[in-house]
Image (cartoon, rainbow, N blue to C red; front, side, top):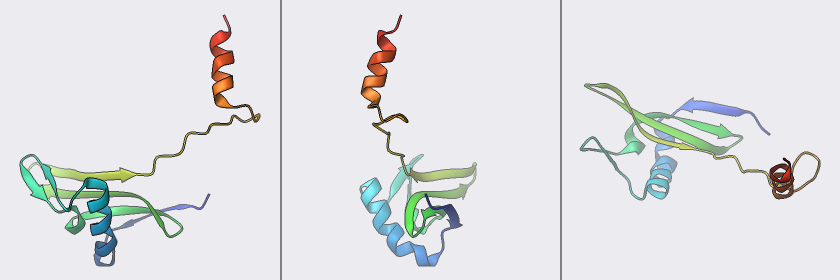
Length: 99
């Protein structure tokens, strides 16, 4: 698996980030604590494996300190086959059947 790279968001990220926020948050803005935020214009970081974005966090500084506005992360796929090639469902059934 390629190494994970985390970089600050910059102006060159705004195009894909706008589409990303719209897709994952159902629109271009987020409302937190009664305030409307446009995450694609906020500071943040992107996590990438090769050229694929696998995570994004956006944040803002307000009177009360730092507020994380969005957090999207890659959720690893749960394996269905164990290390010995046995389906995990079968391993679980065997484990539960033991006294």
